Image 1 (cartoon, rainbow, N blue to C red):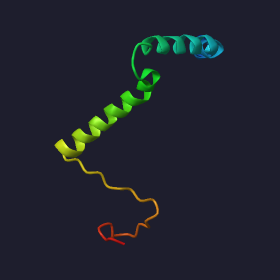
Image 2 (cartoon, helix red, strand yellow):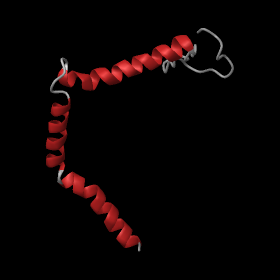
Image 3 (cartoon, rainbow, N blue to C red):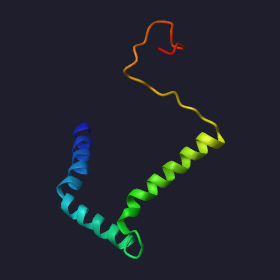
Image 4 (cartoon, one colour):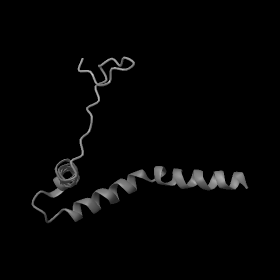
Length: 86
């Protein structure tokens, strides 16, 4: 039973890898078709997530007033002085 499961999972992960050239060609063709008529074309693939991320940042920073502590990996941590400035 474990061997059957192993073979099933192995085939499930190896088949897409074996046919990666076909998958890449289909993906590129689909993306070109999706953005063919737009003004910015394939640039939307980068702009859309960046616009959404910036929208979420504005909402959380200015509406929900969420503040994040800046993590400084170069600052040494000493026992009980987390509130100090240096």
